[in-house]
Image (cartoon, rainbow, N blue to C red; front, top):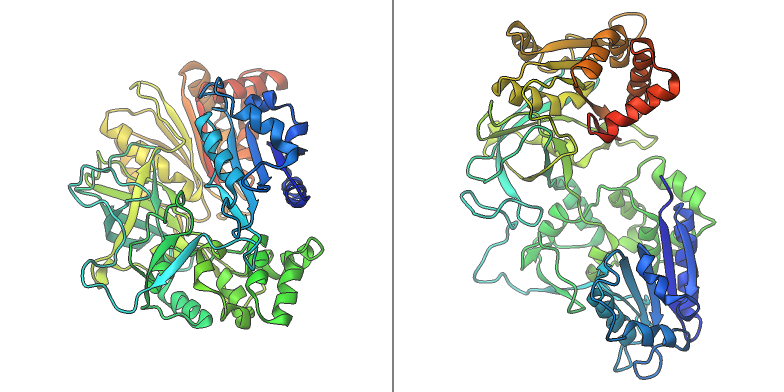
Length: 563
C-alpha cells in the first residue's frame, strides 16, 4: 500500500506557527507518513482540491487579521464563486495559535475552520486553539465544575437504549444486555482461559447475520478506580458537570450530567492502557516536582525515546502504573486536564458466534482472556476480556453495554454455493454463526477446517460439530497441533485435502473464509492455497497468484484477522 500523504500548511507572523508546523512534519515522518510542510502563500492553492489530508496551522495577527504569508490564500479561499463541494475529498484539522488577551482570540483559525466546512471539507476534530496567555500554552478542553451537594433530581447512569425503544443501540446509546451465562470452555489444565458468554438481547431491536460483529464497552476494575483516585487525591463520590471551553466542542456522549468522579474513571478514562509519548509531554507540563518533571521531559524528548520504550512500551506499563511512579506529579494534576491527559476507553469488537435462527433473542461470543507476563511483577491483563471473565450472573443480575455493526465477512445467499471456512482457535467464532445460519436455511455445503492444541482441552463446540456431521450438514477437518511429535496446523490439513479444496473452488464456485490471529497464519494459509492451485490446478506460480488475487477481488476469498 502507498504511504499516506500529509500536507501541513502554515500562516506565521513571528515564526511560531512555522516552528510548530515543522515539528508536526517531523512527527509525521517518525510515524512513516509522507509529509510536506509549506507556507500558505507558497502553496498553489488551486491544488487543494486534490489533497486528501491537510493540517492548517495559523496565527492571528493584529486585530483578527491573517499573517502576511497567508493573505493571498485568505483572499482566494473566501471567493464567493467557490463551489460548496470544492474540498469534499479533503480531511482536515486546524490549529490556531493565539493570545486570549486580544478580543479576536484565534479569529483566523475559527473562521478558516468554518470556511473549510462550507467548502465540503471533513474536519478530523474540532478547531484546536492554542493560547499564549495560558501557562501550558494550551487550555484544557473541558472544565469540571464541582457541585457542593447532590442534585435533587435526576440520577447518574449511562446513556442507554432501553428495551422496546425505536432507536437502534449504538456507541452513544448502547443496549445494557443481561448476561445469561459465562462458562469456561477450555480444560482446567489448559494455558488459556477461553469463555463462551451469552447475552439476552430480547427487546433491544438488535438484529444480526453471520459475519456481524458486536461491540462491547468495558470498564475499569473497582480496585484500579480506587487506586487511581487515591494517587490523584480525588474523592470518588465528588459530583461535577463538564463544561466545554469552546462552543463547538461537545461533551462525551457517554458521560451523564452531573457525573461522579468514580463514574468518569470507571467508564471513560482508559487508565489501563499503555500511554503514548504525548501523555508524558502533557504530564511534564503539569508537573510541579522538579525531579519528576525532569524525567518526564526526558521521556517526551526525541533523545529519550529508547529509554521511554524500555520503561513503558516493552513491559506494557499502564497509565495508572506510570502515575504511581510519579506520585508528586499525580497528586497535583488539575482535574480539568483529566480528559486531555487520558484517552477514552475504546469499545472492543468480537465476532458474533451464534445465529438468531438457532438461538432467538440471544447473542453469544467466544472470548480468549488476555493475560501475559512481562518483567513487571503484576501480569498484564486485557481490560475487556478480564472484565468480561469476571462477570458472574450466578451472583446476581449483570448487564453489559453493547451494540452491533456489520463485520468484514459476508456469506453467499445462493443455497447451493459451498463455503470453506478456516478458523483456528477463537477464529472459529464467526463460522459457528455462519454454520448455524446456513444449516437453519437448508444449506449443507459447509466445510470447516478447525485448529487447536489438544482435542480434550480447547476443541470448541466438539459435540455440536459431531452432531452436524451425523446429519450431513458439515464436513469437519480438525488439526490438533500438539497431539503428535510434528506440529500439525490448518494449513497442513488444507494441503492434505488439496484436491477437494481445488474441486470446491474451481468447479463448484465455493467461497473461502479465513479468521483468526494475524501473526503468521494468514500468510501460511495463502501459501498453502498457492501450492494447491499449482499442484491440483496445474497453474504456474504467476497464474496461481493471479487466481488467488481474483478470488480476493470477487470477494470469494475473505479474511477477518486480528493482532
